[in-house]
Image (tube, rainbow, N blue to C red; front, side):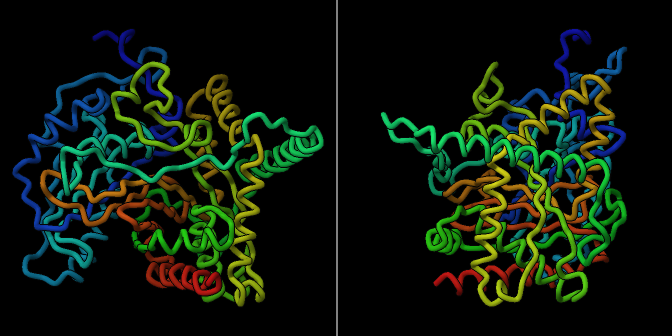
Length: 463
């Protein structure tokens, strides 16, 4: 295949594989039974690789420096890692080994002569699972939506493999009754409100990305954590309880969980330092632009890779910069008001064209000044914030990988300069929240317990 026929790396894919940063996704599948890895090679060869040519490609640059995907022969043995830990130890011991192992692989770079993915099979029982399978995937291959769609193609329903996995239905909030003409007296204020929100949010976004960064606080060391060891801790919440709060407060599921995370963050900051409990802190909320435009439903990979697909494969994202609300003594005694405040902030941010203008400006920056300059802009945006947040929707039914039931599922991202990454994924009636942070700076167990406490405060106050 000559260079002219090789597909180009998408603009967003180039940002994630640049001199500024090398961004990866870690998807963790918690297995319910001891792992038999005898089917690994067959599964990867016959199911995983055919999903998309990028899994059999490396990134190369043409004479003009433009990056493209080049198909190569894949040596599967190079992509399968099975670590060895001391034998006969307790699950708590292997919890530490697993956390250290995730930190180690998060810092390792992919060899440039191999496709940008690995599978790590950890056969030791931890507190959460009989074993763990970790997919490490470079973000240039695709965003969370694309890569999760690829992984789900390798999985089947545990109860009946012949039936497809199903996902929670997502209904648009912007319903309009048929035949009803909106009054000009309603439309004009909304347009003016959106215009005002866009001007304010765009100004805030540009200033935060270019000139102002969050200061040192109990959740932000102020150092570049891109190449520092990490630690990951997770929490599990009941989706029924989240929906109960949602119905009571008249907000969204996202509002409830983001409100709990923001409240827990403030509780942690206050516990660590009364003086800095309400210090200015910014959360970078990563959005799937497909969901913003057409609603959130997984498509098969074959549908995603079609020309002009409704939900295309690749990196289709933008971000909102949200100031984490300050916490008052009144809101500690009535935490539902903090969720309402979070809801209003996010609603106002969404009632703005900033997310689309940001993506447009990034593309113009790439076009006229090159992908490295655009990548540095993304890098600064992430580095200047205190937290990055992302979420994915998982299946309603339990899944199995090669006849191994999957007990739990979560993901995180690494290689970015942000101090904290909070990722959320639903699965079988539960919401799993993973928190990745700089090792040795924050207390991960205290942070997670503050978020758990915040959620239960909100649940109790909403009853």
